[in-house]
Length: 98
Image 1 (cartoon, rainbow, N blue to C red):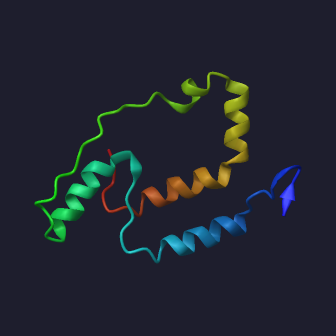
Image 2: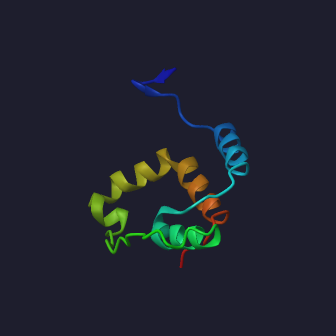
Image 3: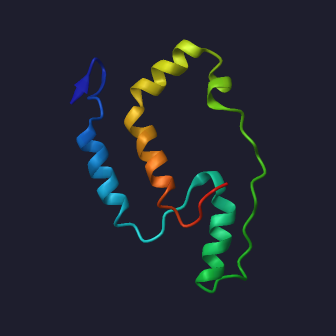
């Protein structure tokens, strides 16, 4: 179903379903520290001979990349459940990023 040309808004029910699905995943990695997470995971399961390329790319904060506070706040409101899911799932990852 579309909503004003877009898909219907995400609801708390969608968020709850996503959280339920994530709790069934065996290994969850955070993209913010993907290289170190993969390296640790591979070592744990005995694949420590596999090289992991480290990404040293440091992105600017999203607000700064967008360059428009009004647009940034609108995007945060529109994606509130996605942001909440990401923040919640970070606590469930293999390695807690610094």
